[in-house]
Image (cartoon, rainbow, N blue to C red; front, side, top):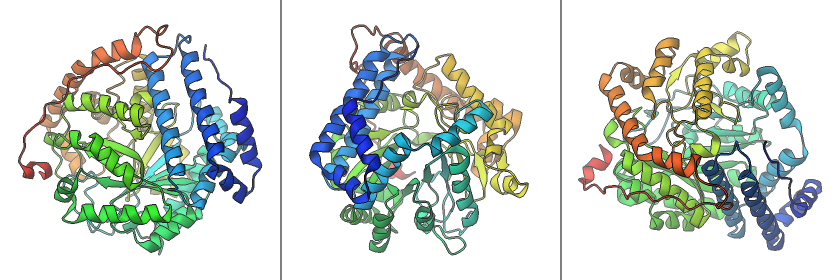
Length: 514
């Protein structure tokens, strides 16, 4: 039986005050350090009380409860750091509190849409859309998953706007992720990304960007709209970043961060781990450096062998990936700095979230051609959004696509069988099982690179070998630390198990970009 924890009375009282406050009063409450200290204390206490209560729940997996608690504490710490260091403009403060407090706790329009979807389809609606509306980019990064270039190929702005509108009304979604190409290079029907953000002030957006097109004027627009988070790509220190992205890009990134920080626009860093930089981007010096520059979170990716010049040789090794799992959770525990890793942090969200998710929130991915895929890293599409709208359909039609339904069933089976939650990705970690679904439903590859991987036996063989090695390193962690740990003596957060340091490889500089 699940144990529910009510909001502490003090926290509930503050939230009630916030719900009744006007804009200036709301901002004043958030800027009051005494109020914030009380909110942080009560929120942290609530998470730890939930953790303690979960120890008596026979259905709760101890290690997963630890991860969710640690991630929650890191999110609270990151938000408080942004407030205390004055990284947020008044408009960002107002919008964060309006959306998170008023909409989430006291208004029910979103919940009504969620409940209607659940009644109709028997499962929670997708919680967000990942949109790559344009392929154009001003950089030519080695290994780009999108194979972005100067092509002006773009999804019509009217279609983009319609999807956001539909997701709000049909799913109750209020969060959208923008990728690309370079989001700030997107233009269609005389409009860009900022026009979309400004048209939907009741939503929050996050955009993955190289930041080199960010100007003072853009910074000012962002400060005034207050509902777009930027996630800025870096590959490591200056040499590593410039090798992959172009000479002088690292300095341009730092200049953009300074501009955004001054304008009160919150941002994080997007880090892609490869076998050549994994230790660098998760070093204490690197994380501290960007925290000092104003980053309030990090999105940690692992190189996926798709897109431009895909290769298995750039993937982090299984040993490195195991270390990255340990190191990323260590950072969140010690620094209360939020880091998200789709692969290593799947335990916090019940595994894979692609194809709409399996009941704990999820998403679909839509690219510049309108092709809808399970996720950006599984580039196979059974349907195009243009065709859905042309026949009078809605976003809900995505839910009924057989290929997407099969992906969600795979996710449910994975969870119910308590398979190794440190290896949750059907593409990266169970590629042979994904290939069975691809052969059965024959979704269209979204580019020539995706098509080539289907006919390359070495690709499948390499990923299968990778998965076997990774699971051999982590099965014991999954069994002992997550599933079968004695909970009676671990009412609090249990220590992380020890893992071996990865083998540090000596490679020529050129190897970092090839």
